[in-house]
Length: 98
Image (cartoon, rainbow, N blue to C red; front, top):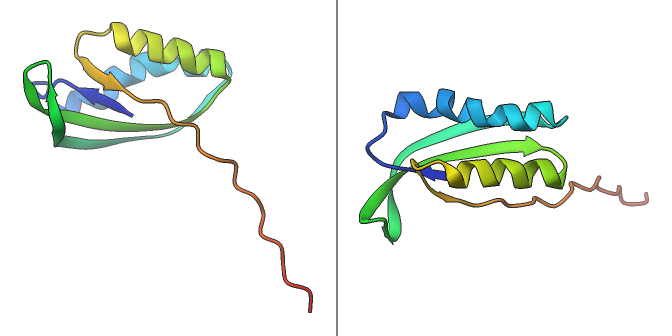
């Protein structure tokens, strides 16, 4: 998840994030989906702002590639916060014995 400054144009969020996602692609990862939620109210004030533009990025990559992506996003001045969450592996359901 990435929270960006609220004064950015929402239509420019996905293309600007795509520049950073080249790190994932060049590292052998796969970007499944970029979902821009738009302008939302923050739970608390961050950098004198009560709103931010939320973007959810669903990707599969090695941990070092994800760490590099997070590092580059944090260095960007228009990024307020980043949050990397590792989702649990989906396990196949067992069928009940008949």
